[in-house]
Length: 197
Image (cartoon, rainbow, N blue to C red):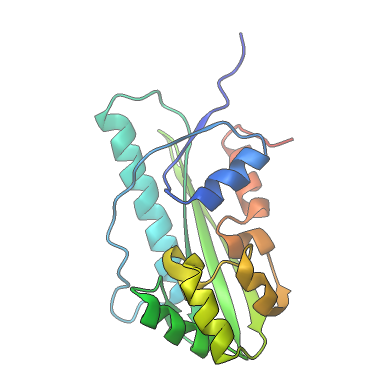
């Protein structure tokens, strides 16, 4: 009998789905609806860890509510941090341009927390990466915003896309910056009986 290696992914992110698929992890995407607003005074790592846990719990509730087969469930949350400020997804094009101006010529952090849940437990791992942007021109900011690429991404950019040309240096996990740190994710998968290799 072939073991069922499928997992649930409680995320609508096409980037997370693609990263897992590239690892050969069969998955089923399910919904995890939560309020993603930071709590007053919440530190960035506490914020991403809380959201990853809440997404995992919301997804698991969905599994139980609909009587789905019990398999491990993976959830994640990514945020951009400039200084001590959490920078989420832009609300519109003007907000995206304002965020990119703030990131221009500076170093920021990208924090991604990954949670894995099954019937017995919930485990969590967090990746913190550092990204330095070169100085951006107003024309580059405007053209990038009009590409629509920044609109659904924390920090108003996707390093795997056009914004890769803005990046002078990274220290940490490239895939963590994309939205799912594969080193930490593979460790969680192995802990839950789904080793990648």
